[in-house]
Image 1 (tube, one colour):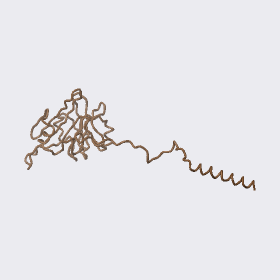
Image 2 (cartoon, helix red, strand yellow; image 1 turned 90 degrees about the vertical axis):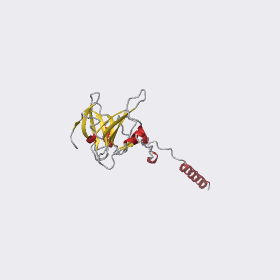
Image 3 (cartoon, rainbow, N blue to C red; image 1 turned 45 degrees about the vertical axis):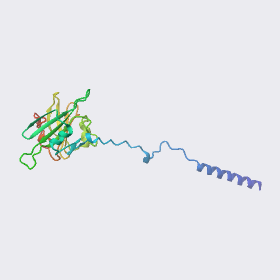
Image 4 (spheres, one colour; image 1 turned 120 degrees about the vertical axis):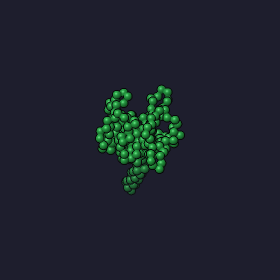
Length: 217
């Protein structure tokens, strides 16, 4: 009887130890990954509406088709410009001290003989890196970076800037956006929006009258 009692006590002890082990929480496996808790990289913040580029539509608060007088009410009197034969090109230049000088250029066209002869915005160009698309494309970006977002870019023309650098104009006709890219470093120096489905060089003469066209895409 004593022997059986000892066996019974030993079995109870083993069962108790097993129960305690099962209740203990296993230490975390440092090699295990929890996909649900994986930290995803934050999405780029959408630019402020005053600096947002929407291809084929607007840059900041200046929209394609907007009346020229409305542009002046938003940006004030232009710093310089040129006008002839119902077409006008106006520039607003940044004046921040100790900052690189940038500009906003607005090209307007008057449709003479139509019911509405109000001069209206046909193109807008910016050079400041503050202006960005929703996918964070702006001046200062490289051509490969831009091509990742705009896969239908085609070179339409080239010209020489004031520094005698050769600059190519790349256009995404369907989306209505063009990029000026210097050949020395393949970086974007200016962005232009225009009506979708059109070649930006069709009305680009006021900006670069000496450009060489590469032919129509």
